[in-house]
Length: 373
Image (cartoon, rainbow, N blue to C red; front, side, top):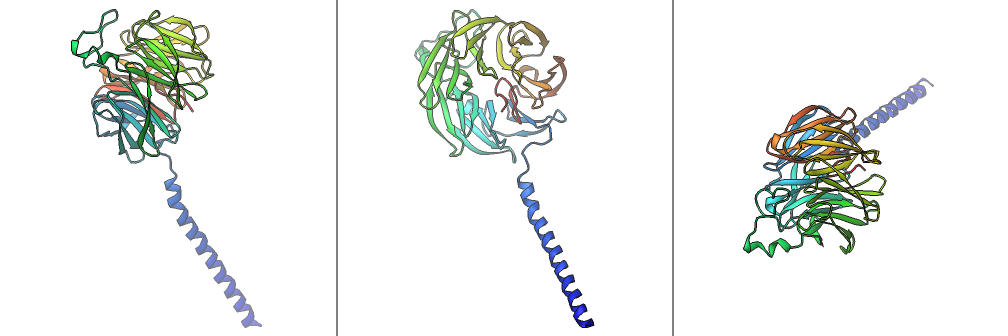
């Protein structure tokens, strides 16, 4: 009887030990999986990626507003950039190399360089595809001043008429799969509210063109010359009912309805460039380069609400993912200004050398190069 009881207790102890060992083994196996699933963001507040035209890409930790690393894009002249929806890849247009660099955001390493065409500028990502605008007709040197004609060059008369191509890149395959023909010197890119059309600003022939994304077919052309020249930024409202284009040499915003009919223009300060709505679609923000202002307008009445003094050559900006701040890249001031989105005042600045050009965040937020998901 005693032997039988002792044997039962021994068996129970062995079973308990086996169960504990099994649970411990399961926990050890789960640890690597948890690490692999960790997001690429450096802090709970996310990160901002800032392209610098004379160097690479700076990464800003949005919790501390400090640059934490610099990414080598292994090419020259980074400008437009976009992050994939999952935050795992950053696509950067490198102007001098006629390519894009695809960067693994977890390691900071370039995993692919894809040739796209001469002078790539804007990058937008939709799903597994990147769309990259180009400027094959662009010449070196500063642009002409408002009201002046471009410098004439007999050897380049034909080149001015070269239509630009929007490269369509399959990010899964890592290659350019086709092209959409835009106007000379395509600049800004925007997706229609339903995702079926691509809206392009073409600065050299003063048009906004609308294209079927699947076929590349030209759907509509909107001439801008009677309102202003050099259309640059382009943005759709969060509700999809309005499109805005900045006219750099008209000092205006061109307002289009959902069918791309011109509704009106809105006066801005000198040389408007980047443009965006806030996430609720209540306010419109415009970076005016020569005026050194970030202007804010009511999205319904188009009444000017505020002007925020900025710095030198401030082109592109993004809200932070929590919508509390705006990050404005000011190229010739080697700085990214931090602007309180409610108070509409500059609260600090982040030193970013080598001509900061564009800024996007992950998680994605509204901005002149991106819109929130």
